[in-house]
Amino acid sequence: MKTTIIHTTKKLEKQIKKLICTEDISDDSLLGKWNTALFHVHLKKCWLVSNGLTKYNVILTDINANKVNDIDIIFKSTFYNQLIYDGIILDSKKAEEIIGDLIFRPTDNDRSATAFQNQRIQDFEWWKYDFDSLKEMPIREINNRMNTTPIHIGKSKKMSDYTTSVEEMKKTVFISNLSDHHYT
Image (cartoon, one colour):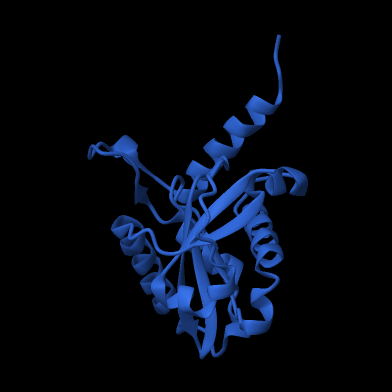
């Protein structure tokens, strides 16, 4: 089965020490590495998990110590449901294949990923004031706002380098689906 590497921030690493893997396991997933950051919403611990390739975000809410043991299931379910909400139709089996097993690693000190996540968390901070509690927040809608915010991918400053995380994820999933079908 494929493996997906998720690099944690130092703050999150301290809270999930038992999940951190230091063995040399390669990342062979279609989407490449992910980064995750811890943030708080109304005193609840939340994770922002961002894909390095597509800049696609997944928000995991109210992740307390009891839920950490089931983080694989929580992430995969949330990822799949966010894909559907964002209009990226994929069957659950294919989503499971894309992600595979999750391997949590210490920080990779990717400053670009950290800056990207900090900006998304700031966006979330702005939007959260419309709601009284975490339970009242439409998390998928807020997550969709993050994933449809224009981003820059590429090295030049051409307009064609601007896209959204949803569009990038659609391209990646589409390419994956094409490679599954063998045309003769």
